Length: 474
Image (cartoon, rainbow, N blue to C red; front, side):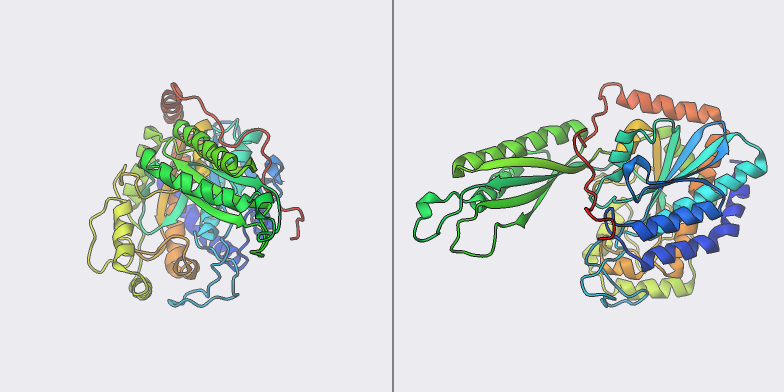
């Protein structure tokens, strides 16, 4: 803990350049595995900061890694920079106003996530140089978190094999240590093949692949009564086989996203969904081929790391916002409904407050029951490396995730202040770990104990390739 003030001062010295990095990434929103400009911005920033930089790690063209320091433990700080489709939005405006119709936008705050993580890594780098401590800090710029599962492919490639501890964060409405609950998931395409024919003259000769998709969807919907209450299944028809109603569709594809609380539950649920697909094919005399696109493991917690990070959060206190920040946040809250705001508090088991436009507290350890969670590829990392994450308060209370409102707040002063706050906590946590070998060993022991009875199975099978675009400049 004695290292906190020193590394926080370094964060303050460096923050302006990283706020600019966050804003530049906001300006060039790129989606899964297309983040070429964003990845290069991160690589150049690492080089300017004096890191040893590797581009295209794990065979992913938009993945980047920077390392600094010598000897000692290896502390990885994980960043992201991918955006979401269809969320283009003008910055700072509390009304929906796309910059580009149908364009991309940073609706999950990954512009802040990457910049804040690299700011923390850069502060630790300078701290190591100034203190003379042995240790290495790495910044991993990870693409395609939004359904691309890059960290799962990176784990499979072994890029975390020599890492001792992994640290990350995510923008949120409130600040605190992330309760390590997420849903393991697989994204799977089901390709049905049938036989085309004239839908009126010779319907008896056709075998409809679209019928098979619809029957599969009905069957999976009936499964919902008979699966764990924490599981989730979503689907989208990505190829309906054509737009001519007088042709029996010879092909159709449906993409499923299957989620479950644990890896074993996920594997069981995926097997059942596949059986439903096979049944739909049998009923329609079609054939079906399944293809896993991506997959994330659930998060594995680590009590020593969570307690360490929480102690740094308590010492630092919540982020400090001013009246102008609060007034702007109130304008955004007028675009939310009461359920949005209640859900924002409920996710962290906090009691709703009147007129609290921005976070003014730190939520307690293990806050929230895990019912309002999604999936993250950080979960896969947490199975192979002791991992801890925080939530950083960067936007108005009640802001829905993956929304135009979140995009619009991504360059505001409050976003910068929340990013700096998260960077300080991550940096001082990393410095504490580097100076405390016993804490690193305690984290590793906790990790081993949690995995003793449940061996790791990467939800991305060995034969699945990352869904890279066919053309790098697409």
